[in-house]
Image 1 (cartoon, helix red, strand yellow):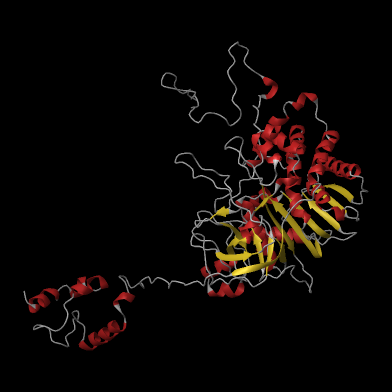
Image 2: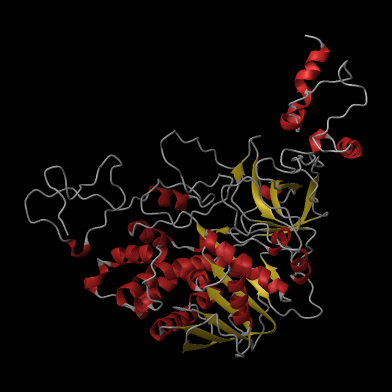
Length: 611
């Protein structure tokens, strides 16, 4: 078949079936005997002038720039070549740690609890069961739970003997080296104070503040709980042999985020474990809720005052604090800690910052809505990372650890998300550290494919992966580098898109990451692994769900005693057992065999009971 016959067969289908780049290779090329050199196919009724104009327009567009339907063809962005990271030096660093006598003071607190709120002998055998029931109620989504649940006798006894001391242990390292800007005569308000958990932790963590005069107003729904907490705080000062200079006042009030009218002003506004539930009950978007909460807390704060919020280290609390942080910054405030900058949060969890929402809005809204500076964020993650810290439980006495094991709620590690804000900074306010040189360590240490270790961190550049001596610092540490941070165009981690930062210091001891064998298939997920790269918190381990791991390196024989402790079985309330001679063996809570099946109340010979 010659070229002329090929052209004659192609002419009827040129317009109908060969109008996109998929048929470019099938079109006849060059002149033929039946088609002159200047010939151009036109549809019926089209003039030669219009045909020549269409030909010029089609020649100006390459076939690869258009696709069927007139939509532009997708063009992949050019591959970015990042500059390799350099080894920097560490000028200084600070790590959160509790004072040396914290464990002794917490043990003294447990003795004062038994005196301030004695437990009847008939209730002592049920205290472990009450602790477990309260833990289940606090960690579950129950809309029927009353805000003043702590007023019930059984729950109050469980809270004072388990949750109060552990919350004090968790808050003590955070408050030990935190710049709260307090001076003699300043006023403090503690919202949702409960048994004065945060004032007690402040007294233990800051010995230099014990002798100055501070006026502390404690606000909660239940007065009796606050009075017990005031007794415990005064008992600590009395037994330690120091004069109690603080003026503590308890007020039975409820905090509302919808009220923004003028209130009494304070130098420090604190709230621990208060807004993690009430914040999500308000209707509106995350940004609107954060604006309401920021305005309500700002109504209590004097000019130059500060706000400290501590919440559990779960994803919802991380998103709440990230939205509150952005709201305060956009309204003229600034974050003091743990943030090292005022740009967008690179670890905001489920909260989408306005800096990244800008592209989705129209040009008119872009100019009307302020936004923060963009930073590098994580990529390729099934769950967006949120800001939370692992806290050393070194302030926990051994008797508290043993009681937690017996109650079926052992503590692997402590997790918290916290934020220190200044809604109205002074005109001459200066940052505590240079944002261009500061690195805040966030996650646990984990192994990398090359055999080294790393940690995720937050910098002004954004989401970062630190190596070398920075990876040997604990979670929550603040490091000041001797050179500016690597820019966003520097080397990245292929898995997480984090900016690589390498810094070394001979003053930081090497902390190896213990090797953990890979899990066998079908063995289930280990939610409490320290070396996994997502840095997700484990917090309270569920009763006997997983074997106990050693997360307390360097604690010596005490860690061995913790690991060797086995949880005894929890007896039913009242030790009620069957009266027959054949007593069935009682399984401990959560230690049921994985092969056991629960009995159904019906079967093929016992049908369901009709309603």
